[in-house]
Length: 403
Image (cartoon, rainbow, N blue to C red; front, top):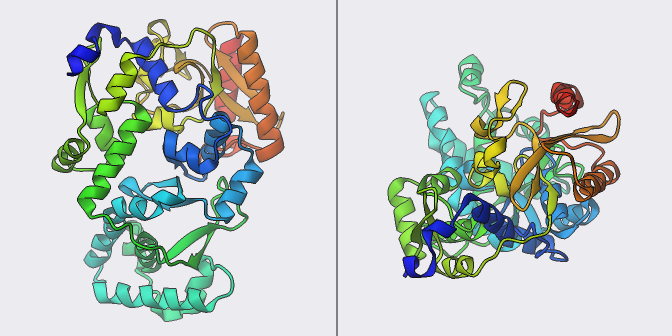
């Protein structure tokens, strides 16, 4: 069936880049959609205390920060630990099963505590005490407030615990409660790009799915978000074992197609049909995205997004095509990386390096995103520890690349 619908020779890097761009809704097809709808169609937005969730929604649907923060406050979208225990911003229909596929990661820290002499019963008791304390509080409580309130119930694990990344028993209890949907983490100032949190009680109904069905749902979403991915790429995102991945692919009826480069991709059957009728757009479609945007992060295949002639380009002596993850943010045209950028808050500007002379459309989009960052965010942080000082070297390198 697949070979009759798709010709391997037609699945060139250029077509596949444009196809992924389309599946991600970066071609304008998500314009006017809500935050929930964008995250459902394009994929969960990776959140590491950076601004990616905001740009994810602005680039695809023009949603401003004020609306995103309102959606967070009203629980239409929320930041939760899910696949591999990583935090993403999800739409509310995905909260329960999203937590479910990340529960194994929440349990994993207890193995460290067990080696430090902490019994499971101690953590269970602490979970109940945390929950009782939060239920009694009229406001969310941050970890320090919880430690102060719980006193000796939170055990210090000493120098040995610090070496193993577990200074007290509290983080493990909080992680387990969050994975169960009994508490949730709330950004202190309501913003997703400033990593200060408090906790509040929560009663999230279970998904109603067994673990196999939840894994199959994640694979189905993942293949829809990407438009097709290799087996290893799917494992990177999901953290599933080989057996679990194979079972999930079979459950959703995924089929394997071969690209012109000889790479096998797993796709959903209806996407095979859609791709067979897909034509790459002829006009420019310019976007500035975060280095952790779903287009890049879901498959960690930034090298595939470079034209053959750009694969040898370097920044700070690092060859772009050899980077598993981008150190700078990409400027793209229909799925192809055509340059890199960083934000310089001191000068309130975007420092951009385009591989070729920028077109009018590129310049316009840079100006639009620059104004949006200045007005909505004030700065564009990649992750929680990112700062203007820490990225100055990269800003200087991008400026130098243009000279």
